[in-house]
Image 1 (cartoon, one colour):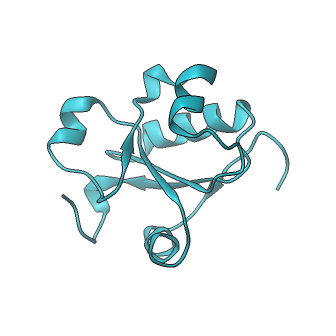
Image 2 (cartoon, rainbow, N blue to C red; image 1 turned 135 degrees about the vertical axis):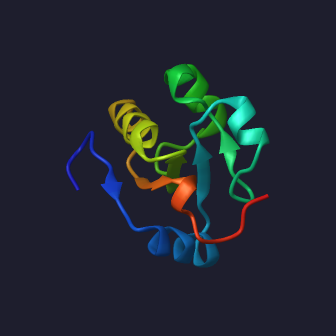
Length: 105
């Protein structure tokens, strides 16, 4: 994987990683969207607020495996690219919660 890039994975793969690995699930929607339902364990970091400081507060280690989603898959791509630019090395984007077939809380 080259620097400053992220990988797109299927929601099935994301779910499998959540179940089998230590991952950070990142919801990049807005607070009210997050409050109305999110993937269990997900941490909120709205895409518009991502910078070195906010990212470091939520994801202190650059090599943390981060699974990124939003509502439909557009903002998660922007957020994943932004995180990769900031030097995060294990960013996986899996689209939007609207098509997430698993548990939501």
